[in-house]
Image (cartoon, rainbow, N blue to C red; front, side, top):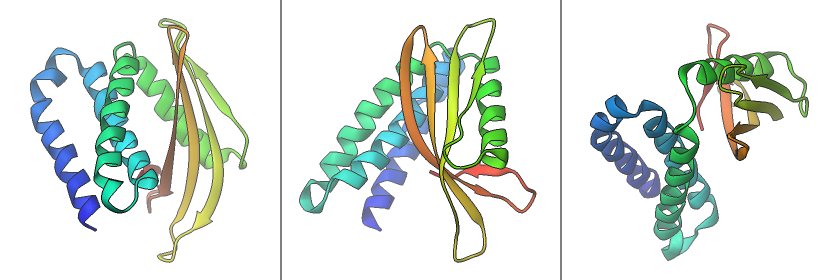
Length: 158
């Protein structure tokens, strides 16, 4: 529980510090925040005991840097393509079936692959997925989890 609080404080602090950056370079800032969150999550899964906080911090820094680099080149249309493909893939694809998107203007591409589907104790259906984004020939891969909301949309929760 304490680890989750440390992560939450770090994310909130990063968001507050990034307010000006969001206005100046929203793609890079968004990528940095998402990357930092995913990096912190990965670090929390790897680290244990007294090394857990260090693993989270290292994961957040590495993820933030990688996400910022990818975010530099993602524009609004790229994000729309990625979000629509993610929603459609989570709703329609079988486990292991990949959907892809491409922005003809930026030539950036991506894929989404649901990896597992399950029902939570509260009755909500969730799916883990892998997502890859290719910007200027550089590929970034991340994993996530999304759960179906009551309105039928999938919301990324991790």
